Image 1 (tube, helix red, strand yellow):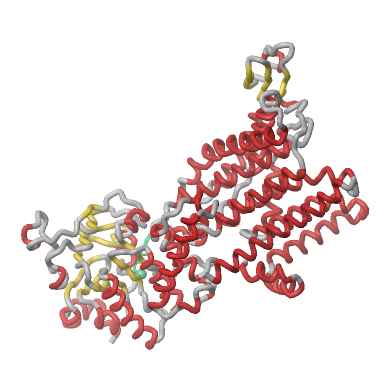
Image 2: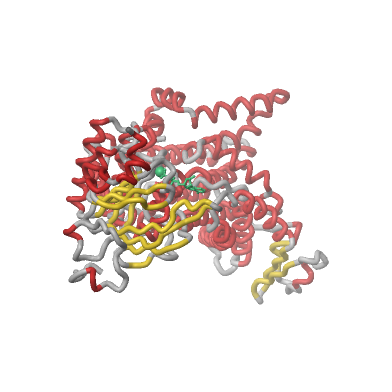
Length: 282
Length: 354
Ligand SMILES: Nc1ncnc2c1ncn2[C@@H]1O[C@H](COP(=O)(O)OP(=O)(O)O)[C@@H](O)[C@H]1O
Ligand SMILES: [Mg+2]
């Protein structure tokens, strides 16, 4: 599945137009391809004809006014909602009929706009749940406390500490996840997602509720995560400094429709975008 | 690592506490210092501790409401009685026969647990409460129709759905014996349960439940309880883990039922009715959801209480209510737990953990 392709020109189905895939990822299968994706809620076309391609190591941004359908796109990608129309390919594999859990096994992990931690469990335990698939002892060996239990748990806890060190959160390992400050909860969600060893990380408003210095640090860390894990990151964010600062490709959504796609410069100078979105903020 | 140690300490304190309590009570019992009424409560208390701890696995750890836990106890009790009574000659050793009976009781409950759990736990939403409520009722009615006897040809089982048949329709040989006589329940049961057996079952239950909670499986179960969508998003199979908690809980209730059933000469299915399910649920809720040692303490106190309160006669229900509130505070209230932690060293770790 990872074999190189000489050029995407030979592909049976052409890449969607206005592809924003970065140069370095052009020779390999894109990690994500959405084709004509759409969902209706009753009469409301929450997302319609959504086409997007994301490169293997790309940081992509999904922006748009409130209610544009951004979170809905994430819910479609992770099968929290089943699409009404269209196709989602992960690493070239069709995801039709897959469950949310299976999508995670296929390499997609996410965070949530309204934080969804395991609030009654410790920070460490939250990450260990993310590492569930990495641990290989059976329920019986866990109950009987066989050597495989101790070995696997020790390795997982070390790994969890490594992950916590990305955000310098080692000290909070024993704290109850629900008792953390807001920013720390968002960071923990990212780590829990990373623990599942994804190849595509979806972040829904990761900087929401963070102060400017926290946001600046987060920006650096998102890039660091991409560089160390060699994964693609797709993020929804209202903080334009963050989006324009780190996203190589940006997709703008308005009323469920893609109104623009391109680099930060393209987007910032696009009159349609300025009118629909940026204009409102000035 | 620190966390592992802390929870290990809580678990250890629980094991030690239960063992010490057992040794004291056992010494008193064998020394003949217990009244017959207290002595007679020792085995049932062990059974109900197992019931409460296992129900806590479903209600507290898995976050699903079950209103039919006594149904599994019933299945286990009658399954265990059938096994023990029919194997009386095959397995002369009483302890071994008891072990086999408990295993059979657990197994019967596992099968029924799957039958109840598989269709319900696949659904999203809180259907388990209503289904287990119905299950508790149905299982009682089914057992009331059951005719079971044993002779040299083996087991004879008949369902008296029409209500017209009696134990004579089994056509047992002269030497055969009736085991379950429909609505009359199990009769002529050889009492083979003992307090030490009850203690061992409690310890086994604690090992299974506590070790499960501290393993990846238990964390998955708790993660699903805390946030289903997030749990799915990190790749957990929701149905699998909910079912696992439910079936393990059923198995333990089945074993508890078998021990309970073999503690009496006769047993009727209505002993395991809705009230019994609710009683166990009260132990769990008052002991604290997800709090295993809390379930144990709540069970012991509340099971003994009605007996101990006889002397208060008129004020009995008032005192009962006050004790209920105190137990709830002691096991659920953080400040009170911290306070208790200062007085009792063991409690400190427990308080810190919950
Ligand atoms: N489960 C749902 N049922 C009905 N309408 C929904 C549902 N989820 C989202 N919507 C609607 O879809 C639109 C897009 O919502 P959302 O994706 O959350 O926007 P945002 O871009 O702010 O993340 C909104 O109008 C919202 O009300
Ligand atoms: Mg949103």
